[in-house]
Amino acid sequence: MVALSTVRAQGLFESSLSGNPVNNVNNTLSLGGFIRSVTYLSRIPGTEEAYLQSTYAQTGLIIGGSAGEWATGKADIRFRYGNEFQQPVTGLEIREAYIDLHIGHVGLKAGKMISPWGKGTVYNPVEKITPLDPTVRSPEKDDIYLGFWSMQGKLNLGQLMNLTATWKPLYLSSVLLIDPVPMPEYVIFTEPDQPAMLLKEGSYGINYDLRSRILDASVYWFDGYHHWPGIGFQTFDLDPVTMAPDALQLTLHAYRIRMLGMDLSIPFGAWISRYEGGWQQSVVPRKDHDFLPFPEYAHTFEIERTGSYGTILAGYYGKIISSYSKPEAEPSLSADEEQFYQALQQGIPITGDLINGLINEQVMAFNRLYNYQLEKTYHTLFLVWNGLFLYDRLEASLPLICNLTTKEWIIQPEISISPVDGLKISLGYNGFFGPENSLHDLVGPVLNSAYLSIKLTF
Image (cartoon, rainbow, N blue to C red; front, side, top):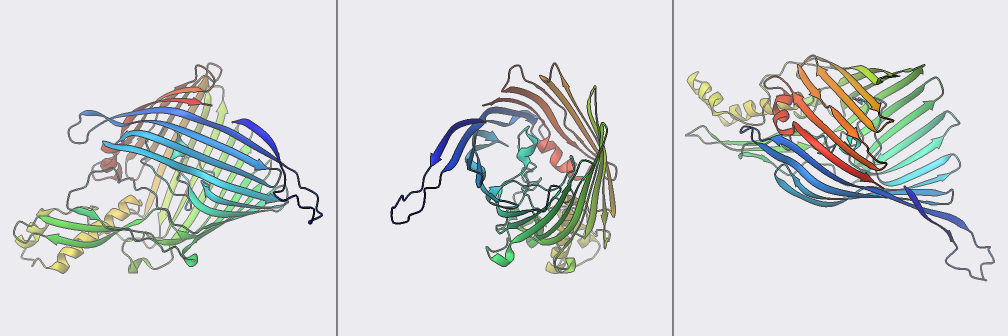
């Protein structure tokens, strides 16, 4: 970012009646940004024909400013034009725009911001406040985060400690990983059930940070709406003659949780170890709302080492589901007339209550599939290698993630070259693989893709 100007501002009214001297403030303005062209190549699920999954041009303008030592501000404005998932995309987005006031040991930040929690590199069990878009077609990993309006107050408790409180009055949902997946025509998502814009419906987060040369540690408390919505069953209509589904109405429900978590990072020589864990549960009992997840404890452990051949990070991620019970149906967001024929053949009368009960159990099981709560425990291993070569002009990375419980895999290799300062050309691949009826089996054929990105930064 390049500083454009330094200006000296004076009071608007230099009235002799006030008798006060004019206050001088050093204001600075900086401007930077990027221009990027991105293309994703994939195959159409079912036909396996190659197609341009996403191709777009994007420009971003990043503006920074300050008013002396009292305030700083940032705005990240982006414009994109192109095509994505066979649909045109054109839009102007203010990704971030906030003012940060600071007086002594007290600070206040307000506006649209991105403020993720946690020190985990691959998984963040304490991250409940920042919404995500895992379907975003961008090689920049941070683009997965969505900006949200909030206010943050920070209190500096000394050289090593600070306390931050975040108030998030407006709910913003994450984008479900299944959003790009084609659904049967009879599946209809109705108006989402979201909290009203009332003060009592706001989300609150508090985190305490301790930083020193021997460790970094944080404690987190969150009371508010989880950024992932739950999928709730509404109504189902069945043709009584053909037994074919006519309409299945589903609703996305926001739900309130409480989360207590912590993280810890300890360096020792060329090694860094990290631990992060969080316990969450919904505020209202799960028995009253079928779309709510079970209480759970999720944790991750990482160990990282930097050497002559790059940086290696290895880790483990696990979950323990509380109050667990086995699902009573197979996960699905659709209906199959075969299941109703089987009931007729067994002499079971097809009633409205029976049909609704069957479909509701399937939707409940799908929520558990999406939240990884079909089993009582989950175990995942991951390995990430990143290397720099040719005087840091060439960069290669290879993340591998394997869920031992579900037998799902993620592989995301990338190689980037910077022939000159400010220009970066990246080639990579995103792959999600899993056995039949797994979440990756559903989203993988839609999201798996190779990409080419050319980015000019100024």
